[in-house]
Image 1: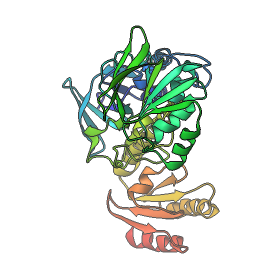
Image 2: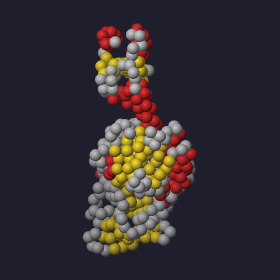
Image 3: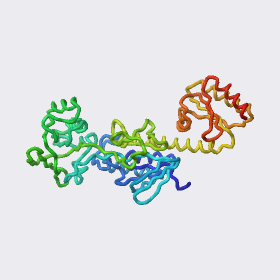
Image 4: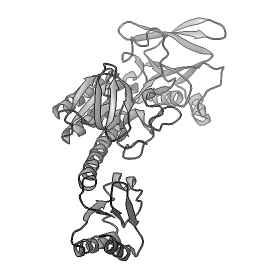
Amino acid sequence: MSNIYDIVIIGGGPAGLSAGIYGGRAKLKTAILEKGTVGGMAATTREMVNYPGFKTSTGPELTKAMADHAREFGTEINKDEVKDIDLNGEIKVIKTKKGKEYQTRAIIIAVGSQPRLLNIPGEKEFRGDGVSYCATCDAECYEGLHVVVVGNGDAAIEEAMFITKYASKVTIIVIHDEGTLDCNKLSAEKAFKNDKIEFIWKSVVTEIKGENAVTGVTIKNLKTGIIQELQTDGVFIYVGMVPETGFLKGKVEMDERGYLSCNGLMETSVSGVYAAGDVRTKYLRQVSTAVGDGATAAVAAERYIAEQESFRNYVLNSDKPILMAFWDPVVQESLDLLSVLEKTVADHGDAVNLIKIDMSRTKMIAQKYNVSKVPTVLYLQGKDEFTVFDDENCIAKLDAFLKRNI
């Protein structure tokens, strides 16, 4: 069992690194699997000015500090790509491209999402040096400069308007005929009225040019075939995002775009599997929100592992029948029930073990037995053989039940 990890985090961006910090600090055996550059998309950002507490930083500097922090707490960071995953059972199994197999009690999915690329010359070469996919991250770098935006959906138009707070001019390249945008009508009306925004219609960008940084783009008119060059200081590309969840299809619940669905504890549809950062369905995808997700997922995973351990030790391995009392510190009726239960157990010569489950802190066991209200008492004769007492006369009924069965 020593080779089994407590937590394996798939993805080494800010969400994964944050989870690694919290997992390692909790003294859990933790590993991060990252197929590319540690730091994810954030590591490609040349200047970062909106991460709390850091007035100016670079993506590589900030994410390196996160990785170093995680390693200091004992978290492994391994360069490898996940190819298959088995989420059945208490111990999950992860298989990688390098042929390694990781067994783990909990998994945090933090693979993020990647911008859909134009796949044109210059795009990859100038990424981080004039090519960007995040206005919130990089718009301030273009104070007083000219910027090109590619795309015409909600994200493209709304981000273009945000960029006008800094840039002197924003040119939007639109594939459609004049006046037609894919964004919502309100955003379109605002963009048309913005004096800093100009549109080039029926066109696509075919090349991004520059030397050490972007200096211009080549644009092709789809109707006439005419090619023109436009000088610009930066290119923001918004033609969609793609979550990297292909290896999870059919195994974890996700939306139609492939983003993972989870609750406030970052729990997915599979017990012991969590999602954090840009890979999950969420309102805002930023480094600051990703690290919060990672912290939440790791703490939730820690509690899940503790619950599993307690369940195994005190329930599955018990040599006596179990009385499991579900209570909540804010429900007085459940508090009163606990003291009565202690006397009831004593009256029966301690022939049963009493386990108290605080529903405000522990969810796994309650979900396992479909307990949704407090107070509720379960009498367990085995792992899956139990009787439920949850009405106002549960103590009297339980007492009578114990007299008949013990």
